[in-house]
Length: 46
Image (cartoon, rainbow, N blue to C red):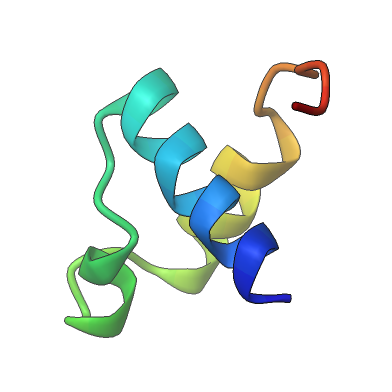
């Protein structure tokens, strides 16, 4: 699970310039986070 969280954090930064910590800080809504995650490009697993 921790590996997935790190991969998600990296993907959000790489594709959108969004810091996942903004969700914890209350600067990013759960709805927006869900939309960004849902529309992340499919990437090959490393």
